[in-house]
Amino acid sequence: MNAKHARSPVIKVVAGENEVFGDDDPAVPLNVFYVSKSLLIENSTYFNIILDSAPGRAVVFLPEHDFLVVADWLDLLFHDRLDLLQKDTLSFDTTEKYLVFADLVGSEKLKNVVVDTVQANVAQYSIYTLRDLQDNHPSLTVCFDIILEHLAYVVVTEGWAQFMNQTHSQTETGSDQDHGSGRSAWNDFIADKDNLAIVNKLLLKVDALNGEKAQNTLVSPAEREDCKWHEHLSEETKANCPRRGGKKQECT
Image 1: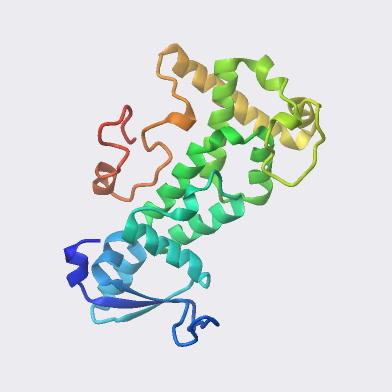
Image 2: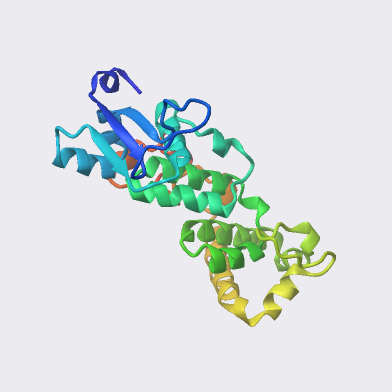
């Protein structure tokens, strides 16, 4: 937020079709926000298109009923941080909700901040997480890719024996399923023929990372300082990505 945005006309943003009121302050709708027009245009392709096509428009109804998500997005724009993401991990349901909204409004900033959170906490996930994502969250392909690369990195740096000897009690499955404790998570995983596609993807990724290791370019997914998994809508936003300046790797 800067002086340019402070001088800009204010747009009334309504999350949903109608205003929603709470008990704490019945006079103030919970899902209505008054936001600088220039801030919206700068940070959302959706608002850019809507407001550009109707310059005099003062009210925008968002096809998004979860006003808390909208509020969090605006907090990110105003304060350049999202308190929700300061937690150690996000559930995949929550991750999906925010990424869907980011796609709706065309906010690469929100999407990339959420992806960065998944990346920073990738070491907490196991191969069973990939099955959970495949079955229950097919839209979270970026999360699948990050976790797959982390697991392959573990194999490349610690060896297959270490990876295969992990028990269920040593891993976080990413789901509510109880697989027991003290048993080999890997053996149980490959025993299920429905997991073979995931195993094949892991093998291919291990081969790719072995190639990077041979070229001395291997980097831990949790420690990457580039924006490999970011989405950039233009060369300008890519150039302005906070992960570009002074980092070891560049945005690709």
